[in-house]
Image (cartoon, rainbow, N blue to C red):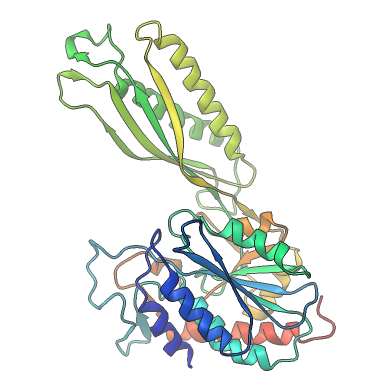
Length: 388
């Protein structure tokens, strides 16, 4: 099958983050198995989702993992001019469809080159690692990376995460943590604002603390100019509370996300926020004993990626991609999770992140071909007796 034919099939599976991906993962499994490769599925507790991993090549240390996710973001509310789950070629050099860029294009390249991988005289193995629920918090990758590390007798050295990067090597990503903070105050007539504790007013103070914390990090020169913006960010994305203008709100909550550069620790920032919350509780319980602030995670933190420019994986990707310009990104991806398991990790894949998550998402024929060419060069690298 050609890479376009495979991508057509992959796009036809409308697997959104959080939903079962068994239809697409079983199709990939059967395709890979048709080339005589043993495929392993790693199911979630409910057994309605699964990650896939397999090895192509010899059982020796030092191979490369090719990683991608099978889920996509919703299309509801977006103004598509094509069927989002039917890969469409308009003759303009682009292939339109949800996930064509992010990131089924990379998976299609992997599957299209699989026959050559099988035929090649690989000195080092290639692994596929395809996950689920990346789009709702990179939920499956930690277990997948740990499993690959322990399941095989040998140990892979590299992990290439094929997020769309226009084939540029990405050596850094920010960490991300999304949280929800609940505030429990006391209801009452708005004229009694000094006798009660407004959950909205206190939420406002907490939000202001978070903004000030971000500004303080900048003032303290906590900067990494590889990123844009070059500092950790704290953003409030949703606020809810109150029932009427003349009623003191007894309940409120807000969602916030924290995106950290490698030099900043998510736990430290959250810890400082929690300390401030406990201070506010101690003070306001004097007015209303039931006052409380509780912060829960919306999804587990995703670690940052901070691959050194002189790491072997960077030199490898430079050679196989043909690009020597290194870059960083501020979005979350699974690369940091593979790096945490000891794999030298970097992001490099076909397509542009500018096309991801929007209506009429597309990948160009040229980018798909470059993705295929990169994997052909990877085969050549891993077939060399001098490769390390």
